[in-house]
Image (cartoon, rainbow, N blue to C red; front, side, top):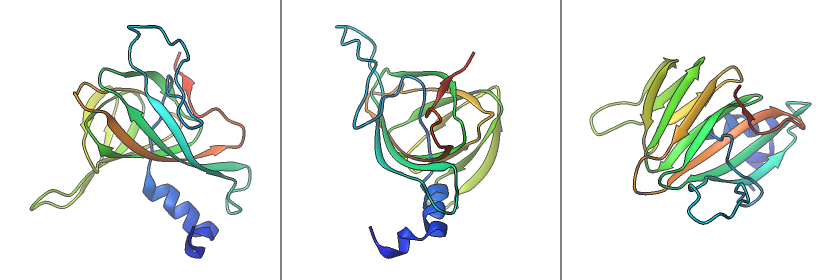
Length: 171
């Protein structure tokens, strides 16, 4: 890691700009699943924690950088997160549904058009594509699915209270 990324303000900037998504049914610590191992079971998303640190500029919080892979046909059940999380789609198309609350969606720049930012409020379903970003707050209840034929890969960052779960099932 470069010295520039070690400063607390840069770490928090990376957290905000890296942006996030993760959900109930997603596993962590390298690559987790529900552990059922049942044949014919629905595909499950995996979450790999790339970095976890307690930034000095945010006492009482953990900062995460994660990679989530959502295989074709996988669905993430409705859930919330205990803090701010941001996600950037690296590959594939994610069908993302807001059940209650709102999120900020930043659409990637396309040929001839600048990036756009919008607040999306529930109930609403949007498709997030490569380089799109979604920023979630703790009040947001949401779910997601990969309806495509290729895995969806998401880079996410989160700032959560220390010891808090990465997600909590809604309801």
